[in-house]
Length: 391
Image (cartoon, rainbow, N blue to C red; front, side, top):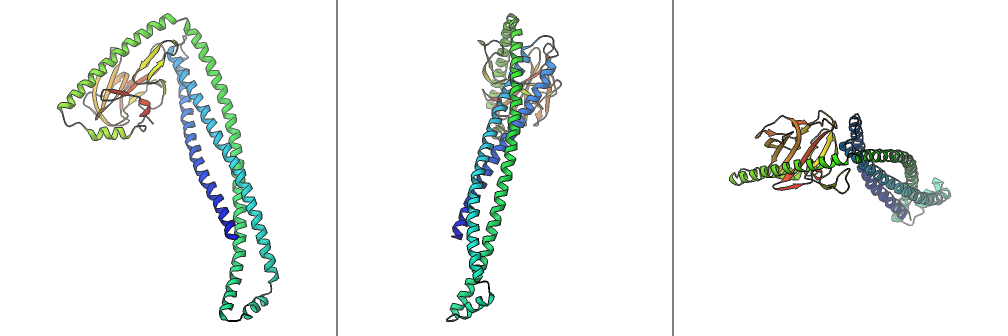
């Protein structure tokens, strides 16, 4: 009976420990995501304050607001996941506490029964008589062992009761702690929902203002599309030239390419801090719902005076001017990273560069006061989503 009870307690504690470790890991992961989203929202708020100093509403401002709304929405969903885990934990604690209390009652009853037996045989003389009244030596030895085992059983049962009491207290304390966390999370989430509604209202107001500028916006779209096509044509030509050089030169650094590829999802951001305001691929224009914009990379809005940072060791493939700003391409074996919309450039073609090295000063728009880096990742002739490469 005693072994069975101990076995049950071990099973309960083992299940609880495994469940607690898994949930703790999930909560920690979500906590890291919360911190990341909160920092990004804070960055976008700072950038919005600077763009809002302008009298006219700009498309960049709308892009920042849209990005901020997306981050807030993600943050609220992350809070939902945290609350689901914590609520599940508190429910589990209640079940564990009930199970442990049942085991505690069983142990107490067994201990009480043992005490009754001990009371009846409390006289040491009785123990001696019990041993000396043995028929032979072997029986005496067995009786001595029995008495020793009985005393050990009493101590073991008392220790089991104390351990179970401790476990119950720990569960109750953790349950109360999680209840407070749930309350705080609910309050934080409510505040975040209020801020999200404010952001949406502000966005709608700004979109309404921009509708009056629809003609100018369409002209701007056409101009940007031409600039983008020209840039992409130039990039493809440069990459083709690089591929041609590679065929003629067998010394291409395949090890560097493999290292770059193995770091997918771990590369540092090409800016010290920032917010992605234009995603990779086809996306709807921020103000013209029927207009689809193609982006071969991502646009990251950052603080004025920020520099473009190299995301991995490599060699500068080329530096060229688009007519208004500069572009730096860095080769990492068979991979290329591209940093566009730069005012000043600190490197030249052929330079070896290191991870985190400053490549150039990012351009700040005169009309919108927004500082934006355009960043791309290529594997030979194929461009890929940069966000999948960044940590």
